[in-house]
Image (cartoon, rainbow, N blue to C red; front, top):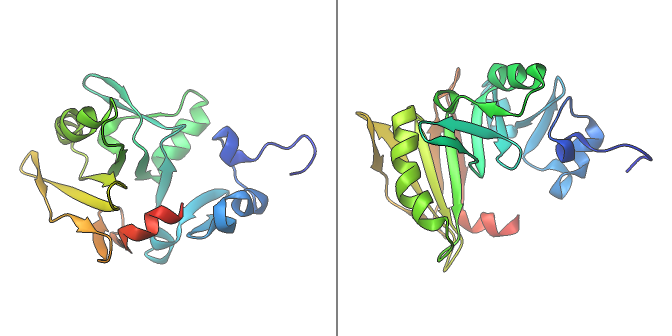
Length: 184
C-alpha cells in the first residue's frame, strides 16, 4: 500500500483504481475495473450496468428500517447517485436486484434471515433473495419473486452448479458451485 493511501474498497467510496482491484483477494479475480467501478465479470460480459456490493458498507431501506445484506446487486446509476450524494450508502430497497444473506446456524440472525427478511424483501419487490449456508456443507437456496411472494427453487448444494439469471438492464447469468464459496 502506498504511504497515506487508503484503498477505495476499505473506505467504501470510489472511484476505484487498479491498485484497489489488485488489493482484493486473489487480485480481484471475478471483477473488472470500469470507469472507476468494480464490476463483476459476469455482468461485464453481459454488458449489464450493475454493481455487485458487499453489504458491509451498503444498506437498504425496508418497511421496518435498515438492512445490510451480505451481498447485493444494484443498478450502476443507483450506486453512483448514492455516492455522489455523499450520504451514508443507503439504497432504496425497491432498487435492489438481488440480495443474499449468509446464514450462520444457531446465530441470533438465522431466524431473521430465514423468515423475517423473506417477507420484507418480497414486499420491497426484490426479484431474488439467496440464502447461503456454509455449514454443514455449502448450499444456496434461491428464492424468486412471483406474484408478490417468493417461490423456492431447489437447494443447490456442493458438487452441483448454481445457475441463475439476474434481471437487470441486460439480464445476465451467474453460475458457480457452492463449494467455491469456501475459497473466500
